[in-house]
Amino acid sequence: MNERARLSETGVSRRAVLLAAGVSTASSLAGCTTDTAPSGTETETEKATTVADHSSPDLEKWVDEVPRPGVAEPTGTKDGHPYYEIQMREVEQKLHSDLPATTVWGYDGQFPGPTIEAERGEPIYVRWQNDLPDEHLLPVDTTIHKEMVPYDIDGVRTVTHLHGGNVEAASDGKAQGWFTRDFAETGPNFEQKDYYYVNDQPPATLWYHDHAVGITRLNVYAGLAGFYLLRDDRERDLELPDGEYEIPLVFQDRSVNEDGSLFYPSAVSEERDGDDSYPETSIVPEFYGDVSVVNGKAWPRLSVEPRTYRFRLLNGANSRYYNLELREYDESSSETGDDGPSFVQIGNDGGLLAEPVEIDGRLEMGPGQRADVVVDFSDYAGETLLLHNDAPSLYGGSRENGEETKPLPEIMLVDVGDSGTAEETEGVPTELTDVPELPVEEVDKHRHLTLASGSDEYGRMKHYLGNQDQPSGYALDDPVTEEPELGTTEIWSIANNTTMSHPMHLHLVHFQVLGRQPLSDYDPETDGVDPDSLEPPKPYELGWNDVVTVDPAEVVHTIVHFGEYEGLFNDQTGEYMWHCHMIEHEDYDMMRPFRVVSNADDDGD
Image 1 (cartoon, rainbow, N blue to C red):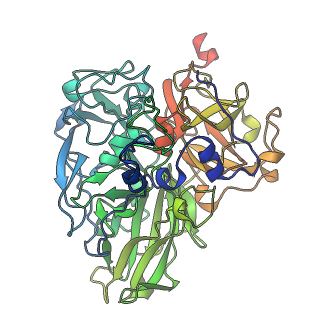
Image 2: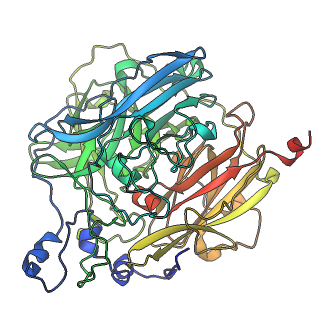
Image 3: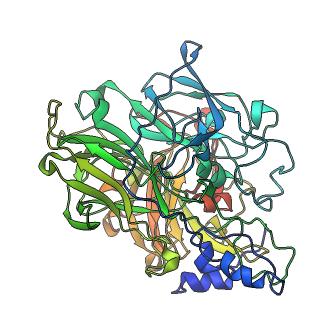
């Protein structure tokens, strides 16, 4: 394992950290640098411009209507259950009316991919078919996990993970379960071609995306992501807005070139100083694009009637946080006015909340998080609204309004019609579902986990996951250190020793947030948590979560049950992953396996 240079837990600035690591802040944090030449060559003058931030073409905003993803249809049955074949293909797609068509990768040739509509209690099979070209669409850094990844094989590696799925390990989409076109080459953890999704969990907004080790950030950025909506009759009985009044929206950021092609940085440092050993194609610490993309369209507008809508919101960005609010908007002057309608959140990652929560202010969404919200436009007939974002990049870290923070404030425009034609729906019910509380007094084990930073042999920033035994972190391929037993309940206390926020995701399970406390008040030698002594979870963190944001110098305490609990979820054993969902971090090296093992009592039966 590489030696780690842990960052100070005091007030070290993000800029100082990056400079110390040999990283160019203004260029790399924007996610928009081009390859550089060594210092002292004849291209020295050119170098000064090529390391400057990439800027996408100046596109007119609010030109295109928000598209709605198609819905996947089964191609047949298997073992009496619906069977899908969904192909990953390279296609040309218009991201904006004024841009040439962009080459993207899409499930079934769509960016985002088609929505899979599944029913609780009715399993399905999916074969994720890799029909991608031999060469990657984007620049690949072959120094990432070079001991684990065969970069010299033909074809692009992919593997699909159902994010939020309570599924068998063989169908989880492990990072090392990848495969190339027609399954010609497979990774060491590849087990089967057809994935089995049991759908034995509460109805929820799930999503699927690529998870191949070392290139997840590139595959997702190229377009490999889509919605997976799990429904049941109990939810339908709530009579929430449906049909054309239920709209899935995935928020992403991209950068593009004048010819419409996707731009993704291929180098990070201007400190090479003639060092030929430094990778010419290098991973960046994070990626922040300068174009808002919603459902595959750049800066679109959404037409609604003056009535209630249900929105399935997904933060599908590589690294960017969103902090969202609807504001009144004057399109002629591009000025925002008073607050618009509020979000009423009815669900999050793992399904419906026990009761609706009216968001007072803004709705925070880290990468990978979902929010199921209802918005009533009835008081805004004939008005235009702006979906506004005030989250800087480097979320939770530097709050400077400098170039490196790369804000993306304007996300989408909403046009509210003068009148509606559909019958009005009732208001949101005051009770949505039963969410049983996981009791802290019944916890079987308390795990103390850490988020840490360091640098690699090239001086590039790197992130790690650790525990009480090794707070500075482990490598991805180090032996498993977390082995919860099936049927047990654990507290996972996640301490952030880094200088920025991290959205932490657990595969397989959903957890409840107990609360937060300052890192300075945290004692990792003490087991057990008193929730009353903690800062309580945010309203939109109630219920079941599979992603939680851990801010700098903060500890977030979560409680999780492994297996079926009071009729919810199902029993699964095997190896799964937990990781940061900033995908550049996940790729290098902020991801670890955990293994759910059979209960010792069961082994003796």
